[in-house]
Image (cartoon, rainbow, N blue to C red; front, top):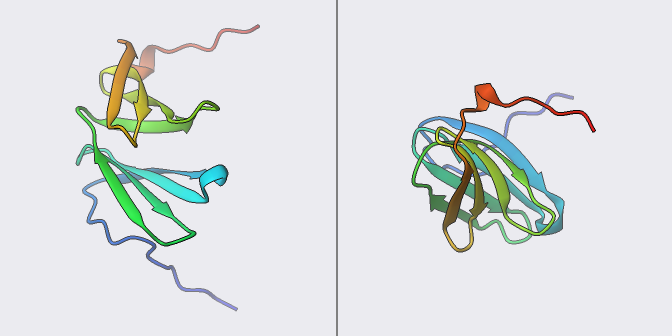
Length: 102
């Protein structure tokens, strides 16, 4: 059995990337890097929401306390989509980040 791809949101992203599933919300988040937007599709009601960002966001990872930590073209930032908050906390390019062993 083959299955055709299914469009879950016709958002017209310029450069759609980085899908992230947040199980506690039953929601899929993704980015439009060039369009400077974060999108969310909730699967309980099908609602699609988007938030503008002040700079390009290239990746997001959910935080246990809510919101996301984001890799941006300006460094790292805390992202709170519901409030529109994007707060930089490290002004370094992602290429300069190194893992530090415990």
